[in-house]
Amino acid sequence: MAPGPLRILCLSGPNLQLLGRREPEIYGSDTLEVIHERLRRAGAAAGAEVECRQSNHEGELVGWIGEAMGTRDGLLLNPGAYTHTSYALYDALRAVGVPCIEVHLSNPEAREPFRRRSRVAAACVGKVAGFGSGSYDLALAGLVELLTRGSRAA
Ligand code: CA2
Image 1 (tube, rainbow, N blue to C red):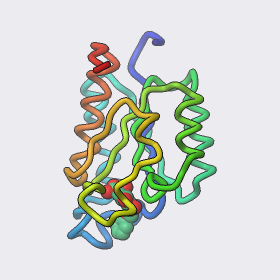
Image 2 (cartoon, rainbow, N blue to C red):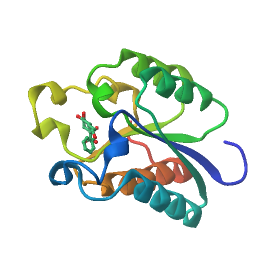
Image 3 (cartoon, rainbow, N blue to C red):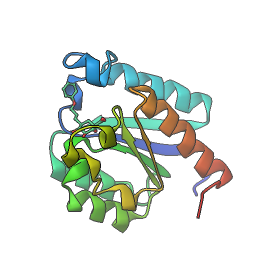
Image 4 (tube, rainbow, N blue to C red):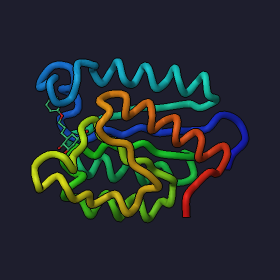
């Protein structure tokens, strides 16, 4: 790992730009901007630079994951509905080998059957789901812990 602050990239997928503006009963009332600001602040307090991006396009997310190779120490990824469909995201995560935590606001496994399968889970070191916007904060804490202490289950 490079010396200096940890470099973390947080990516959110399709429709997550609507957070806080639609369906608050499922996804909560925090906007993505509020979540991103919290992550940047918590990251700075923990010695990490957190950059946050959102895209509605699978290829753009794939490109950003590819960019992370050699430039980031860890990834947080909420792939939105691509969670359940995207072998391209799975392949990208495998290819870059940068530790990634899968993040979900809701608990997809307690929802419709099509949400029960994650295509990216097997390429991630861990997952946080079901804590609303707090899932992002918990995932950041877990990632920093993993990267600084190497506490990773087999
Ligand atoms: O719970 C999550 O974080 C999800 O990744 C959210 C995705 C869903 O397809 C996954 O199964 C679980 C949907 C994101 C849509 O975001 C919206 C936000 C506000 C209003 C409407 C949609």
